[in-house]
Image (spheres, one colour):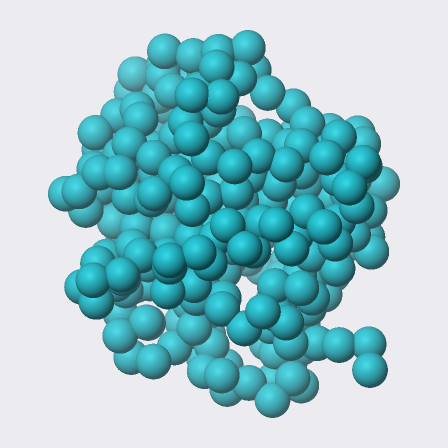
Length: 301
C-alpha cells in the first residue's frame, strides 16, 4: 500500500491548548517507521498550516473559529481527494476532531465522482453531534459528525457544495459514553447506527465490530475510520483533552483495528485528539502509532 500522511495541527475546535502537537507526537513515536516495517510505501506530506487562535477572532461564540476551521477543512478535503486520485491511502493525523470534516468530505467527493459512496466507523467517547443551538461550549470539535450529516453551519455542512456529506445509515458510532442532553436527541434522530459502551460490555468488541463493519460496507465502496483517542480508557490514553472514564481497553482498541484491517475495505483513516501536554511520556502517541499499525495490517503472528 502507498500511504500519504497528512498532519493537521488544528486546535481551534476546542479550548485545551496542545492538541495541535498531536501530529508531532505520532511522528515522534515512530509512525513512519512503523508503517514502513509493515511493507508500506510511506510519504509524509507534512502539516497543513493553521493560524494560531491568537492571530484571529473566535467570532460567533456559538460556533467558535468557524471561518478558519472551514478554510482548513476545505484544504484537508482537497489534499485527501488528491491523495486518493494519485493512488495513495490518505492518513490524517490531528489535531482536534474538527479534522474529520475535511477528511470525510474529501473521501466523499472522490467516491461521488465514481458514482459510489463510503461508510464510516466513528470511534469516540462523545457523539460529536452538537449544533450551535445545542452546544454548551460552542466548540466545533463537538460538532463534526453532525456537520457531515448535514446539520449545523452551512460553511461546514456544505463544505464542498453538497449535503449531507455522508449517508447516515452507513455510519456507525462506537464506544460513546458521554452525550450532552440536546446532542442525545440529535443522535437518536440522525439515523446513524450506535454501539455505546454498554453494547460493547454486553456483546463484546468482536460482535460489535462485526456488525459495524457489515453496516459500513453494505452497498458502499468501503469505509473510513475516524478514531478519537478518548474512546480508549484514560488509564491507557491519558493524553486527551476530554477524558471520560470507562472507555475501551488496550486490547479492545487493537482488536477493533485488527478487524478493520482483516476486512480489507478501509479507504481512509484519521486519528485525532492527542494532546502531548496532558500526556505521560508520549504514552498516548505511542498507543496511537500501535493502533494505526493494527489498522494497516500489523498482526501478532
